[in-house]
Structure formats: structure tokens, C-alpha cells
Image 1: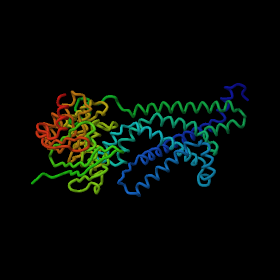
Image 2 (image 1 turned 90 degrees about the horizontal axis):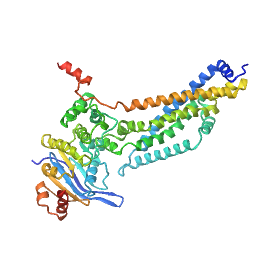
Image 3 (image 1 turned 90 degrees about the vertical axis):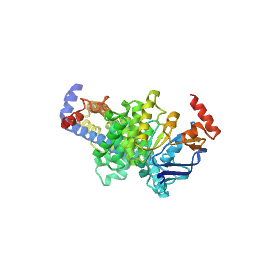
Image 4 (image 1 turned 45 degrees about the vertical axis):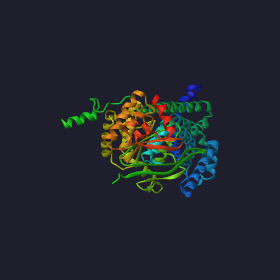
Length: 254
Length: 246
């Protein structure tokens, strides 16, 4: 048996590398799918929430829209107002375990949980988009759906990107609570690996390092994405020599 | 034969809470004419324009488009036929100049990309902005933004263009370029326009009809000569005296 701290680290890694790697994979899977599905839920909620109502609308439409508003309100309150670890216990043992494996249930739970936060994050992003642009979209005849999808939401998402990235990083870490429904994510694998030799300190030191690497790389990736979405600072004068399209056209004509 | 009446507005009223902004306004727009709406701030000029495009929902009265009540038309179809140019330009910040002028054509009118781009470039040429098709709105000056906004509205081939104080948010040196574009649209393009403006010189020169609004009602209307030279109402006289002295 090793007798130093680093000796144990090396030993445990040697012994349990496949376990850690699988745990890392599952943690990433939960974080990525949870953030992605949560993002889609957030977008749908954002579109539904902003459906305009006018006094001339038919009562049925008013009724449907209001019902949606109430349901959305309940969803956000419940999922933001309870810990995910509790949501996992209630949803998995109360409902999901009879018709899906633990991993499926975990994706479902983390998505619903993230969706509630995303809805609020995107609401903030939408508020920051100048109201006039929505009016201009309406004024050229776009529907609510069209103006949200092509004008408002692209900008709202850009505004909200730092917070969306934050959600992703939170999900990398907080997916660990899903160990309570026996999903073999990183923390769960750490528990398994530490059991045999009862080396909690060294095992979870490795686990902590892996989490740190994942979040560090994610933060860089998000920063890169933000810069890419902003596009170049300059533009090309159409018809100038540096405009390749114009040059090609010029050649053809000549 | 008289020119065709595009819009006819009867007994229009608009209330925000207890604040009655428009009361019993009758107003019509005939094909090919340029109507300038003048009046002091808060007189309801902009609200009237916004009601015409249904950006505000009127609380009373009705609007007819070619003799048909617009409540019977799909609102998006109607809006596509009535273009609007805003005081704050309201260009789509996430799109280039070209995309700003094609997105409506593609999504609302169902034109294909080629046709939409050709049309957009033709109108951008007309407002002198065709060099800037790859630029984003944030890279343009106020006057340039407004010219793009005009091209965006024109690209939808509307029957009437509504201008809501198109030069009020511009630096003085940029007002001229936008007014010049609007002159060209009226003289050469024969575009039907309703313009809310504080540019009295422009109204006098370009308008076929000038409408003076005060406290939510149309106080008087007539040719530019009638309104500017021989106004009938005392309030019109006071307003013109105040604004022309500056």
C-alpha cells in the first residue's frame, strides 16, 4: 500500500481510472443535455409568456393564454423553490422509476430544473432588447413567433449568454446531487472508488480536480463563444476591392 | 375620377387609463398624397400614427383600408401594406443592413432570397446606402440608420408609408440627408406618405395637405398655404408663431 498522499493519488487513479472517466462522461452528459433541454424550455416559456393579448381577442384565446401564464408561473415557482436533490427524490421514486432508467430520469430532472432558471434568465435578456425593434418587426407584418425568433430572441440570448454559461457550470457541479437516484456521475463514482480502501480524502481530491478542469475549460469555451457571436468590429464597404463578392461579380462582367 | 382612398379613419379615440389622447378623430389618406401632421408635443400626432398601424389598439372608432374594416383583415397582412418609419429608427441590431431589408420580404411576403436581395439593394441604392449592406446598425450614424429604415419599409412595397418624427432624433447636420430622401420618394417615387414632423419648412414645401392637431383632436387641415399663411384657428396661429420664430 502507498504511504504518501501522492502515492495514494497515483494508486487510486491506476485502480479506478475507468470509473472516474465514465463518471466524468456522465457528468458532462448531464450538464450538456440538461443545459440544452433547459435552454429550449426557457425559449418556449419566453415565447409563450410574451404572447400579446388584445381586448379584441376571442375569449377562448384569452383563456388559453392566461392558463399558460398560470401554469408557467407554477412551474417556475416549484422548480426554483425546491432543491434539485429533493426534486430528484420526489420525481424519481414517485413517478419516473417505473418507466425509465436512472440516467433518463436524471436528464429529465436536471432539464426541468435548468428550464425554470433559463426562463427567468431569458426574461431578463428580453427586457434588455429595445422594445422598438419588436414594434418594427410587427410593423412590417411579422407574427409574434416570427419577430421573437428572428429579432428579439437572438439578441436576448446574446445578452443572457454569460448567465447561460453560468448555468452550464452550475450544472456540471450540481449534477452531483443526482447521485441520490444512483446515477453513476462523477460524485457517485467517487463514492464507489473511495469505499474499498476508505481513502475519502485522496479520492475526492481527484474528483475535485476533475470538476475544476471541467469548469475551467467550460468557462474558456463560453468566453470564446461570446466573442464569436459578437462578430467582427469592422465591415467591408460593398463594391470596394476587399469585398470578394463584388470582385467576383466584377470579373464576370469584365 | 378621384384618386383612390387607401385609408379612412372615423371617430378614432384612444385612452391610456384616464388620459384621453385622441378624441373623435376623422382622417383619410388618398393614393399618392403627402400628408404632414403638425402640432405641439402631446397633441396625439404620434399616437394617431401608431393607431393607424395598430401598434396601439384604438379604444374607439374604426379604420377602413380600401373600404374594408381592418378588424376583418388579418392584422399582419394589413401591417405589411402600411409601412412605418420610427423616430428611433428601430433597426434590427442583430442583422446587417441587407438582412434588415430582406427579413420581412422573406418571412412575411414569402419572397425568395434572390428576389428579396435584389429589391433590398435597389431601395438601398435609392437612399444612398447600398455601399453599407454588410454593416451592422451599430456601425452607422443616425442619418444612415434612418435611411436604411426607410429602405426596409420600402422593400415591403407598402401602399402607404407612415413616418413618426423621422428626423427628431438626428443631429442637425443629418436631418438634411433624410429629408432629401423623403423629397425624392414623394417627387420621383410618388409614394403615399403620412408624416408626423416638426420640420415646418419641409411640410410647407412637400405636403399636399397639412393637418394641425391639438389636444387629441384635428383642429384644422388644408393646403400648406391655408395652414401656414391664413390659419383659421387661434391655436394654430399661436403654435406656428412659436415654432417659426425659432
